[in-house]
Image (cartoon, rainbow, N blue to C red; front, side, top):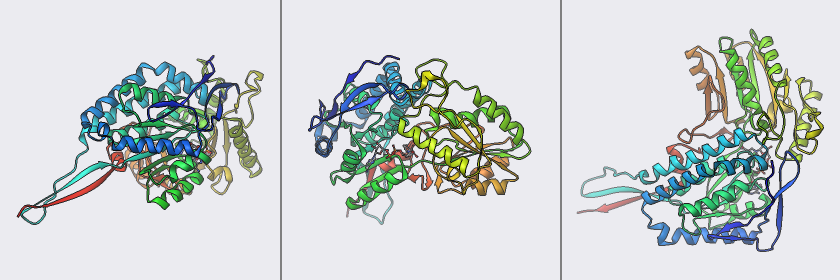
Length: 485
Ligand code: TXE
């Protein structure tokens, strides 16, 4: 794919700006290692300017007094613009993150749907009247938090940005988004489209820069009222510490080590495909990747044979090529990290069934590609059995009965998502209720909608994204008591 080198600016107070220092960062295509864009490398000063702009916009009558129905119409328009620009957005996402064009198109469609969904809720954020002793009126007001900061990772740049921007704006907040330093391109485009859709200046700000400098400055700013963070547990803990100093609201999604359980009576053809796609989509760089597959012992041998055969037939290549089924990892450094995990797996005694290397095709040498990889005989004590590898590495384990598999599935600090395959309705609901995770998919894997809550138990996070209740995190409640006597 040829994406022309773009020299981009960032969006602060409705203006396109360079960083205060003039510093810039190069943005790479992970399938070729080529530079495809340059963006400002923002400093602490730029972070402050963006928060100040959002604060000023929050107080401006243009936004504060805007009819909530109009806010909804702006978001509807934004959804439409995302759809109109979906080809460009998908190409940007693929060239910057590496995923296949088919996946990027899906992510862009998902983003449009998120804006549309929350657009419809903008004028339905209701308070309540509360019965109290006579001669009084008591009611609640749902008010926006104020300025919300959105720290977005690199694995689903447009989808994860949209899932939190949409409810934040619908509720009347003003926002500062910091995309990952690796993947800022679609975020900047969303900023452009938000302006075009009619968000007043300063309501939407996008600053590009590193987590250590800009991210930490944003989450430590006293003028920020809410933080939405998706990323690693370690960084999440730092963000929470910074938020604690200013008593700032946080919503966090911090990854997973998700169990994907296949019982003997499942539709095995569909289950094999779902187990494969559940880990190799986006080269496994997914918080909800089904990275641990538990297969019932009575079907284990045939299932694994089929899984390895389908995996070995996968076409690895640049995401921009029609026939590609799995693109590169997002960076060379991620490639090295995942290769390190493969080494760990082998030395810990897991059985490498397939993959584990860079592909042999010399055409792919410059990109950060890795073969889809399957390990068997993995236990929860092994590093590969408990760490979030965040790459195309599946750990397969055999199980005997329901109690055993539920115990193994829950034997992790994470608790984001899980999959269950069975045609036994009772068993499916029983296992769903016993998994210590924030979401369960039965007889399907990798499924989420803007209208369904998504969030983690245990170390996988705090709060939920998506769904009507997500609006709780972007609003605060005021109680008003009126004495009428
Ligand atoms: O994450 P970071 P990284 C997991 C996954 C992956 C690991 C490391 O296991 O292997 O994290 O990835 C910003 N204050 N997930 O290093 O550092 C950073 O700029 C404020 C799971 O990329 O958490 C980026 O925008 N912000 C995950 C975002 O945080 C800071 C998605 C994520 O980066 C910051 C991504 C700071 N001090 C990685 N330091 C998921 N839940 O889906 C960094 N950032």
